[in-house]
Length: 305
Image (cartoon, rainbow, N blue to C red; front, side, top):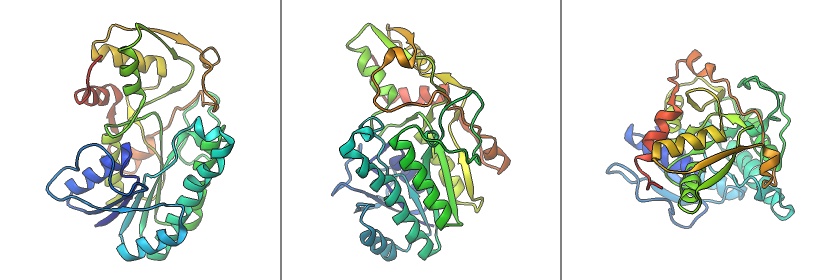
């Protein structure tokens, strides 16, 4: 299978490329940078081709995909700076990337009759209540600019295509980029006590594990909406921080605070990021490992406290 992957300079795109290469697929990666700017090199003996691509440039997107003629596209590229998205000067850029850029990719996939994987987020919901969000729920009420932009991308993909996987994820961490774990470890080197919110509830997603699932999906025709995070139950960011420091052996005091007490975020955050993932097993997909196990494997590749 020939697969075109956007956003390979990010956490997920990097791991998706490696997983697809390991399975013997032909991979072409892209990002907005002139040359690949992520960590190290890709695994294996076959290095994927790299194409600079601004997904907001509709004609360029169409020309690139027409030339490549992929069997599938995994669309990982996105604006993910949630707080920066709230700045007035950034709002139009966020929508251009996450909404119009996604629509540009979807239009080309329709013309080529190829599969598309779109990576979305729990932020398309309002984050209220305590019940896990169902993958086929359409009660969309995003709280912030980022959530609205990702929802617009979802709607474009679902409206334009039949061969699509819309996969919502949350609390992402991977080797190729910044994430909560890396932030906690960096802060632990400067401070003996940290304040972490305990009223936002969800489950982490390790991109290494998610990439395997996305590759599994591409090798089927079981299209639709899915939720995918690691297993291991629902936790708060405070719980996550405590486990990070326990596994890493860091002597840090973690104080739980409410979102209101923390008070630093410009964008409203969902309190309920619980995701129902039962649709994965129902369609024959193996669930992701427990988040504690994923954290242990991630920490093996990181510097300690």
